[in-house]
Length: 544
Image (cartoon, rainbow, N blue to C red):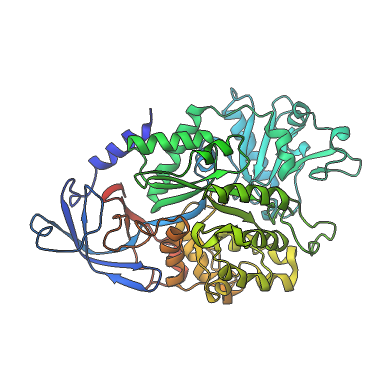
């Protein structure tokens, strides 16, 4: 059913010579680091059972048949978590047109045209990744830019953050979006004459999405396979998948049962899915700690780049805008009450300061059982200073994405102004307040490589070491904090700290071997770290 089984067999056949199946392995002469949530520890050797996958305490019984392996001084870290990613969407970005990183409208259109020409049999041109903030114009594109590619074939391209879409005239026609049908919808952008420009924001995107041909199960399986290949190669052993539907749920469930899932996946059910209630009523799911479902992803607002984040006061660079709800507080409150009744964790997307205030207040209600369920604010991006202390007070987790700061720094202060920026991407303030900070990337919004996130967390710079000294460097994490946030804190955020997140006895032997010591090198070089090997449950699933 899945090519992934073949992938794992192939990888296992090409393991380094010290990989032994079915034995206790003692990996010695390594320089490793692990954080248990209280302190950073150095790890000089690792004893584990390659069958159970457990890290062992040396004793006379398990040391009698041990296979000793010389790590030759290599650098070892716990397997890294991504606390907020989108596995299917990332895999689809490998199949559909990928517009990430293009620095101009012209280059973006040129790449989309090349894709359309190379795939003439596809009924639509579909893709994702454009970002007008990177262009000199810093302005949204329009339908006529895409009409240069085709006026006969519909084109629908989502913004990098997934919170806006760009359509050509044919797609708008098929979706029935015109001057008359769009006149009362402020989330459909229009020109001075009231004609839709082709840009749809957040909830308005549904008017297009319902006309886009469904991606079939086979293509989704292939996309997930491609995603897993890339995830293990960058050292990710555990991904929190933010907002899965039934197809992803069933594919992951089957892969975990068939033992063809190379990493661990913590699935957050999408709160917008029609079958949410039935999935919740099915209860928690845990297939051998490889596919775990006990949480739901909700979403109060959109993104900062597309003016969709809900703000207490108007945007500093566009006083007409205050953002827009994706799910209203009333809708979220109803869903939260249903989730808590079923003992499900709530993970709520909130970007703007008002969106965060409203989500924090909803999650702070006494009936939410936050200390047991460990509710999370996903992104926690623009915070009022007085809201930061509420995270610790009410046992809320801040699930943040360090590379969002370095991607947004060219426009974030323009959007929110000099005063509100003090509570934006405020990681050190959260740490100082005693908040559990879990880190991820939000891939495919950002690149999947977690070392890019570690680098951004520590330097507050892009990979060209800009700006000098770091962007609001006072909010940077130490290397220890950054590793903690990508390992044990993220494991805690997934109720998985009992078997994941550190190299402690009794946990699963999920670890990576890397080519440099992130605690000794210049922080500016962290993003260049390469993964040499990835191990999950005592089995090697990747070797460079």
